[in-house]
Length: 407
Image 1: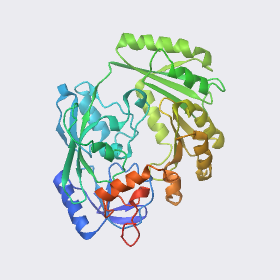
Image 2 (image 1 turned 120 degrees about the vertical axis):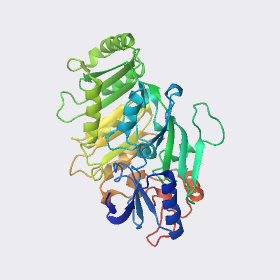
Image 3 (image 1 turned 45 degrees about the vertical axis):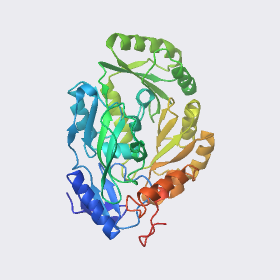
Image 4 (image 1 turned 135 degrees about the vertical axis):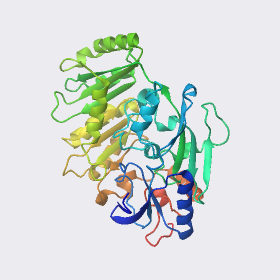
């Protein structure tokens, strides 16, 4: 490991603790000196959030990569937060189990990074997001103490569900050292259909997917430059072979009149590879990706608005979840489009940059206008990290001034 690491142009000292106790010791030492800590897993989300401005120490989490306990019959697994997603899935697959989250760059992504950024993909329609799989969490608090919440069984109702606070907090409430997850059986069969849609049929396809008798586990709308149609619908199924065969046949009938050309059956591994290629169209540390949210019923229309405003973008919409992501074409600055997209998203909707070059990463572009619930997040952050030593400035509520003082 290199002794230094670049975070937003700051060349910082780096450490790589190999045990939770060593991680806690790092936190204690930096807390005593008032020095900020910046967590790095696979390094895939360094272009997210507000840039760092205060020198500190980079903590590489990928050395914390052990599986602590795996009682497969209980369908739970406890692993350290630095384990790579691909390795975790390989271990689960030996017992015909899986964590049904579609994670780009699984060979690089760490479990802690996935949870910290709440990363999910196509199958969240059926299975949910990372937050739904966490049943226990060990974190290091701002005093350098290992604290535990939740447990190692699925039916656990003791105490406050503190683990959920850390999912999506981008490491601003402290580093995750160890995670207990519930897992699912590995489906015997997976199948996908690719439906190049006729012009203007993307909203009809989304509406039809909501009432589809085949009950897919995933429904995506993709706009790929140079494809056979402006929009391609991707429908996923998984389960026992007879059931999946029926679902595929039924979906072909239900969507046949919307197809521009023949509906294509795809192997799941090709779809997984396509999702990764979509993500890889932008450098995880410097390229730009826009993310939007709305009511599920508005997703297809919002995705079309993004494509119209930004021709040449790769747009990936999840109509069942109300999520749209768009890879920004090279040379295009989308910041001026964000207010219009927020209006188009409707009540409760949002639009921001999920990843962007450093000069674009102001608070409003990365997180959108301040929302009322941010006051709650700020109050929690003040209690759990009063000195702002955990990933300072990544989010709007944990700002730390250049002189090192919390704002």
